[in-house]
Length: 434
Image (cartoon, rainbow, N blue to C red; front, side, top):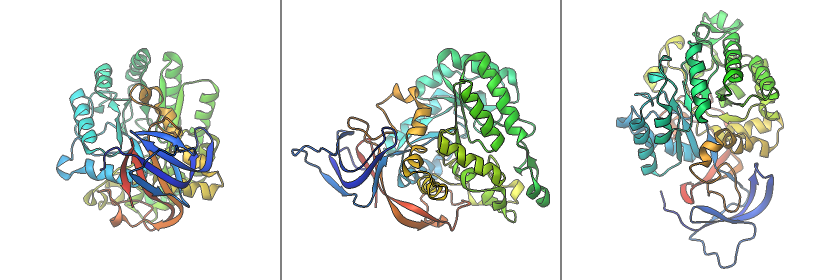
């Protein structure tokens, strides 16, 4: 990756969803920051000039759910491949869940991950610390120490908290110190199936996960939020009923935000087909009415962010029968294109689609990032030079073998998608260019 240098991006359509700026303009970058937009001083001398004619110049994407598989897979160089996949997809900042091997529940592990990521010099990596030791749901971690080592919030990843007393204590502790808790709402006992409850799961003989698994968990979370004043981010909502509860919680003034995955935004349980393990996902794909409700809620702002839920799964783990295969799919390289596809399919504006993957997730991270660096998720003069240049008219076909991620399994295999990333700039450095 190149070092910081003066870069001029010429003739692109600059869109900053955070400020509403949308014009054909040049962008000058120097010393890791956006020096100017539109009115470039005559004395500015770029080392690199990028012709962005016909392209969109946008803030770098922020993905709130990317599994890097480290610590745990250093021998396979997973960190290198997954970060390379991220910048190839226009992602300049990512949040990694704590369900690594070993779990991110010790400061030393977090520091090692951050050191390795910074040394590689690709995109920015923000770790989530484990909420409980080994994600076992019994003993709270040392949140203060984990925050000092670089964690931006605390999560159980895919492991539901069965003990509501532990959840209450976690909320109390996090609220006291101003930390955020990130939870995927799923009731422990009802959430043990492998597909969404419904006619298809019944016909295929697959264990079902009812919508109640999500709504019961949401009711519990909201009641404890009211009692403790905790700030909670809900990860990967999956149902229409869940969206309705979150919408009401926001109206009631609870400090809650939420995201959905690219999988739930575009797919339904029908995409499981005949036991296609590429569609074995967490949360499970639900019915069309749920997908339609998720799309509408993302459009109206009830849902704050769109995430890839990137989970690289190896061949052996996906080759098992559907119910035994590992859940997850690669997605970080598809995030931008699937946001654009949603814009085209649903008739929402390009700016709104970009907001869901830039300023929307930036607002979720909010003050946690503000303590560490300048504003991200926006493209403004004086701001951090994290940006993505892409051609919205260039279509490409998802060929798993061509993906940079070591995870080659995606339910979008064979899809023709809009938008190709031409270059990605992170902190004023050219991280990716075609």
